[in-house]
Structures are given as structure tokens and as C-alpha cells.
Length: 475
Ligand code: SAH
Image (cartoon, rainbow, N blue to C red; front, side, top):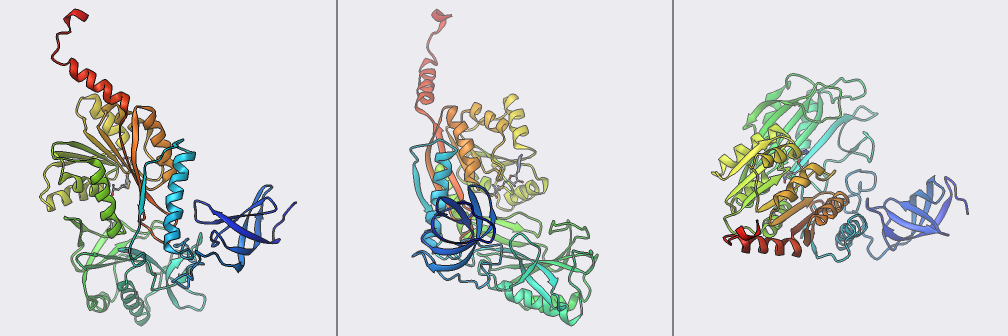
């Protein structure tokens, strides 16, 4: 049967795609339907029809799935941020666990998977310590701030995103109130005029310190004292800055930072490690789950105090500093120079002296040092961006023959590809565990422990037992 655009069909949703969309069939024709949940019986309108499958829009729910819930946020559907709010949280976790398993089976070719249960959150809302709110003007001339609607730059007015902290609303009310009173215009990206582009807010979950950074299309903030007076009253306010960004670009932050009030950074902790976070620093956005994720990496690393560890793609050295507390020496490698400056500063701030950091591409720094005989490791940790590890890096890692490799991944498809390759080189997957760093969204982190396989360990025992043996007769 041929289906066409605008056809309306009744579909039962039987599966979920990896982006959280529902998948169902009508007479053998597969439909992908955003906002639909496994078990829903729905009426869907075809938006795009291909020969064997199509994309459809959810029009009406005829019979809701037992896992369907009313989204806590009334803007969940138009907003681009949350894909899974209409699924109960247990079902979200099941979806994420299955996504990891599917990728490891399908792409990685693994049959037996030592999966441990995914680590979820007790309270899956209000977990983000950072938010960047775009500021604009609606068609009636009113100031708006909130989030972009999915795949657009239309701002959905929302000062109370349920993934962010409650303090965000007070900050946004204060900044927009100040803009309204002093007629300070929002930036207009269609013509590059206006002043206020974004409002960045960061909150230290442990310290309760609050940071506001106004991203501006100008060299200074007019009526600065009126702004800092309003913001300074909010409990916990520690740092008020402006970031100058005069470029016509989608990049949010500009590199020049002006301190308007307080310090140019806030402080927070992950575990026992203290961090100074400035507007431009990278810092994990879900501190509660980050602590669990790094705890897991530490557990998998199996450190007893004498180990040399390499942490590749180390960012600001969060994992490195976490592991340095239990290892003899940790080396971190990261491509962004400012991140390495942060890593060194944070090491010093915590009196950690057994961590050393290198700027550069991991796939260049490590092979070079290995060739010079300067890189050996008992444990290697990798935490690459979505595209996974570079092949040249993995080649060096397996040549180094560390006892254990801990792979932290934000994309289980590239993880599966890399694991398959590493396992072809004599390593075995010992443990796999998902961590839900971003409840309500389709994203999931995975931590994997690999160690040397049977053959490799036997070979090493033989080599070891030959040490000190008189080999002269064999030569
Ligand atoms: N482990 C860190 C951050 C990991 S995110 C933490 O937990 O905080 C991945 C990091 O890899 C980013 O900081 C990114 O800048 C860095 N990166 C990307 N490509 C790289 C490369 N080729 N070599 C080294 N680092 C790279």
C-alpha cells in the first residue's frame, strides 16, 4: 500500500528509536513518531513519506501506553530540550539501558554482555547546575527568554525550566525587569543589533554559590549598578560578569569577560575535589550523577595506590583529579588549552601533586611519548567526545598493554565500534554500566571496564616466568 504526506493512520507504537521517537507499523509500513511512547495506540499524520517508512506527527492518543505520563512541564512538547518527559522515569531508564545493549550487540557484535543495572536519579528533575537562556523580543515587542523550540531559533518563553534550579527564575526576573525598566534592548540575530544575547546561570549544588554572566553585543553594561543591585539581593549570589560577544555567530559565549560584581568564578565540589568555575570553564552539568559516574570509573580502575594512569580526553581534569587521590601518578591529555589551565589550577587548589597535564591531540601526544618510552600505564581511562576515540590513539593504548581500560562514553554507537576493535587486540569487556546524566532527554552515558583477555594474561605469565631463567641455551 502506498502512503502519502498528510495521510492519517492508526498506529500501535511497538518500539522506540534511539532518539526517543516511537516506532510503529501500519500494514507493514514503518512510521517514526516523535512524542509517542511504546504501547500507545495513536492517530498519526504522515509528514514525510518514503518508500518503506515515513515520519509522522502525533495527532491524537486513542489508547495511552501504561508508561505514558502527563509531562511535568507544559512546554515539554514544543521545547527542544526534553524528548522523554511523557514516559515514566523507570521506562526512560529501561529505554536507555536497551539503547546501550542494542548498540553493543548490533555494532559491537557482542553477544554476552556483562551489563550492570543503569544508575538513575532519585529525583530526575532540577538536576542541571548550568543554563544558558537566549533573550529576544516577541512580535508584540515584549522581551522573552527561555529555550529554543526544537531545531529552530524561536524562543519559547519559559523562566522555569524543570531541569534547572529554582534560582534561575529569580535571576531571569531580575535581569528582564532591569532591561524593561531601562529600555535595554535584547539582541536581534536577524540584523545583529541590540545588546543582551544570553543569560548564563551556574549554581554550585554543594556550595550554593550562584553565578550570572550576561552575554552582550557591546563593550560594556549600561546601568550596571542597577543590575548588580537587583541580582546581588538573590541569596547565594557570588559572581556577576559580562561576556563580550560582538560576532554574528551561533556560538554563545564571547572570550572577553568583565567582572561586574563579586568574584569572576564560583566554587563547587565533586566528591572531595574542589573546583573554581568561571563563565568559560567546562564543568559537568549534573553534579549528582557526575559523582556517581566518576565513582564508577574509580571503582572500575581498581586502584590500590601504586598505579600509573593515563586519562585521555581529560577536559578540566575532573576524572584525573578524582583518580589521583588513589593512584601513584595520573597523566591527563586534552586538546583545549584553557581546559588544561583549569586542570592545573584545580590540581593546585586541591594540593594534588601527582597529576600532570598535557595540551594536544590525544592521538598525537600519546603515540609520541610512547615512542620515546615515556608513556606506560597500569590503567588507561578514555572519555572522548561523541565521535569516539581516534584510531591512532587506540592503537597506542593497546600497545601499552595496560591491565585495565576504563571507557567513559556519551555515545554508545561509537563506543561499540571502539570496543569491538579493542577486543580484537586481546582485551575483554568485563563490565558495562549506564549512568543517566540527563533524565528526560535521550542521552545516556556508559562506563565500560576492559581488561586483558585470557590468552594475553597467560602469555604474560610465561614471559614473567622466563625472567631470571638462563636462556643462553636457546639462542
Ligand atoms: N573527562 C572530562 C571531559 C570529557 S569531554 C570530564 O569528565 O570533565 C571530551 C573532551 O575531549 C573535551 O574536553 C574535548 O575538548 C576533548 N577533545 C576532543 N578531541 C580531542 C582530541 N583529539 N584530543 C584530546 N582531547 C580532545
